[in-house]
Image 1: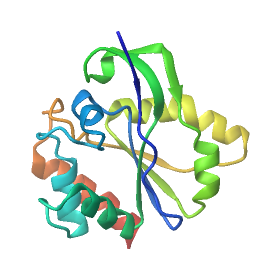
Image 2 (image 1 turned 90 degrees about the vertical axis):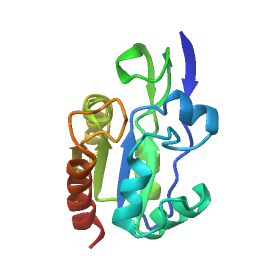
Image 3 (image 1 turned 90 degrees about the horizontal axis):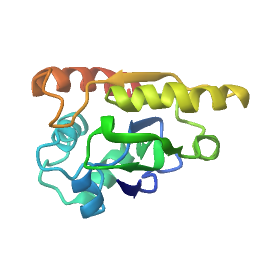
Length: 171
């Protein structure tokens, strides 16, 4: 097993929606960038929704999503996992990120969009109860995973769902 750590959050103080993955995959960790796998649909979908060029540099993509009030992060801070699949995360080694501190620093976040079932399940089971104990709640929605491993939906179906949920958050 390999011990992996997620990235720091990408967010401006005025963020309104937080998109969460579970833990970056091997390609993303190697590149040091969110959603770096070339077949991951995340950046092409966000380019469509947010209106930036899909071939923009990573820094330009980050600036474009932050300008639209979107923050990026992962549920897990660290874990042991072989490969990139969420199913290979060793649950006993998984540590969640500090959402209480993050949400206090970003009070405008009113919704969390979880990129896939694992992110939603981890957030619901491991983060929501701790936030509730602090008197804080943020509605979370399970989005279709943008991972190439999630082939149950077409790009067009995923895009329609992401567009609908981001439109309501960014209107």
